[in-house]
Picture 1 (tube, rainbow, N blue to C red):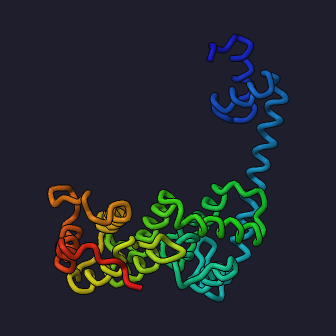
Picture 2: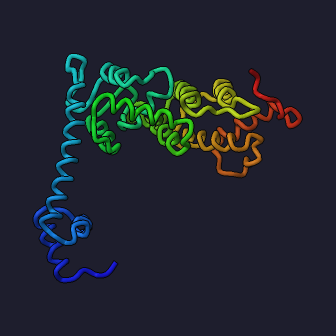
Picture 3: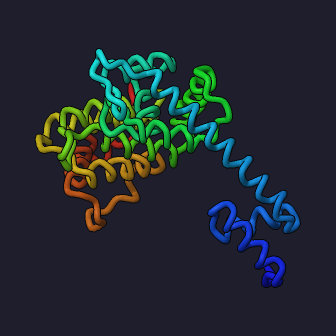
Length: 271
């Protein structure tokens, strides 16, 4: 991009003085309007008004949810109100759908929604209308992508750990982790199943039999990494005990090999 002329530099300074925007934003709007300062400023302010209007609509939607008799405050919605909101969006509490909304609004805990997370999360969607029907449609599209978009599933999976652990704690109770894994690795989530094995069921059996400690963030994240690799390579050719897997993964592989010795690893998933 060629350097700015003295006239263009003056236009940038004037734009910044009027709007308070930074130089990069000023140059963008000025380029779009051939360095006609008045037109560029009008476009910037109009865009800002649209953003402000969108934020105001989201703020109002949050305010409309508040019920002080339930213990809601200006900045935090109670469990009862959160559940009611999920039901309004036709989101099931019995499967992974709830985690989609929790990730969307950056919920600090399961059953709790903050004003900041609600506003910032919905603002990031770019929705131009914030009616309940538009919210439902957007959430449903996210739910439908859980099983087909590994990167999105990873985001939802990782946020489940953040929302699921107790306040001030660094780990997730193993009983809670078991419930979350079962929900996330089942439809409409991303089933941990291959042609030969139901890995999700094997993992559940292993945890129940061998693991009593809490689940820290690294273990939580590495379970998903391992799950993704097993779904691409169910014979575990990728696996080596010399790799940097956490000990629990190494123990699970030993558990698996004990169940399925090499000559029996062609067993298919039973109906």
